[in-house]
Image 1 (tube, rainbow, N blue to C red):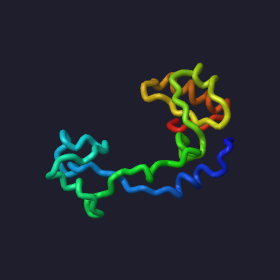
Image 2 (cartoon, rainbow, N blue to C red):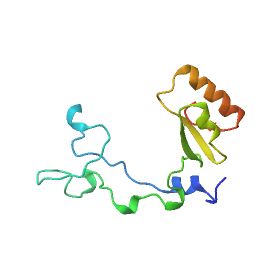
Image 3 (spheres, one colour):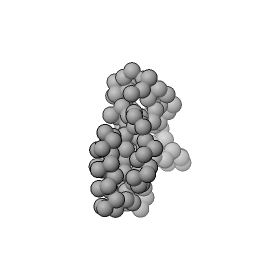
Length: 123
């Protein structure tokens, strides 16, 4: 599969907190879903790095280079939009069908992927 011995083990052994925005309790227009923004401003409660305010990201939380870009199943991910894209995919890759693909073309892609023994992540 790959030269990395235990991708799942390396990925699952890493733990980091879920980084929350400072305005988590505010209405939707300010919350911006799960997008993390650096706290700025003297009145920002998250600016003081305290445990009860939530953790701030730092370089120590980064994934090891050997397993960066791998799906948790241990394979690299490829986005596929049509059947021709499937023919370019080799071993050691998992397929994700694009969200813009319709039902008819999706069924063709799934059939071809099954024939090629490829793992489809959202099939």
